Image (cartoon, rainbow, N blue to C red; front, top):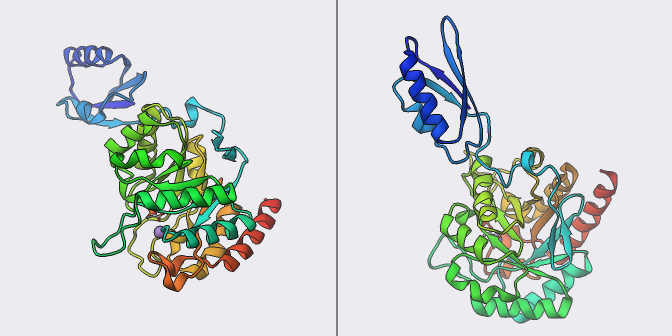
Length: 333
Ligand code: PEP
Ligand code: MN
């Protein structure tokens, strides 16, 4: 952190500031120039609010040079984190695709989709049971029954399952879920992040909030990590911008950026990112090419009749073609 002081600041004021910083375990170095006085600070500033220093009368500006996240920071953890989800590895060169319907609708549906996506090479089965819907009148998911049906599909195929937890009160239903998704709408539900991080070490798929910056995404990951669960996967699923042609705006450069800043694996969701089934193939290939550690793709056996997100759901045949292209592109990169 670099603090620039206002002109005419007295030695007494500087001594006061040094004492304040030292009380927060920060070691200040003062450089007095003819025009400006600069205070360089070294030490762990994760617990310090720079706004507090900026609010002091003598202070002109405060510049943060250290990121506010620590556990998620590659500086403190140079090696890639490899997540092991019931034997499926993600990160550090390991790539996996999770696929399945937006929502679990029936045993027949989830088992049929699970078998199809497994045959095409998916390593995980996705399926929502507790659904965050914009409208209270829309299908809200089958809840605990949905998780039970997901377990049946898991038994039939051997695919580990990923499903979204919206409310910690439902955590008991998730005993048989292998990866817990925290959805975009709950990315900054800090109590949920803390509760889930303290309760389980199961992998958490943390999706980027629709208007969250990357720093906010990493700070949310930090909540889970700091609560005791080191197994976090970040997920880019597009954000809201002025553009309305697609459901969201996907910035694939985020994958490279997050890999630079953090050791955590990064997955991409081409389904929610685009909102259109016909785009999922090309975007998946692009995500694999840029170095995503995995994808989460919506696949439905009968998209026109899907109870949720049918327009962006691939058919099993489309998914099969996409998986073949992804595997070729991965060989190339
Ligand atoms: C989902 O995966 O079905 C979902 C609701 O995703 P998001 O939280 O990214 O909107
Ligand atoms: Mn969906």
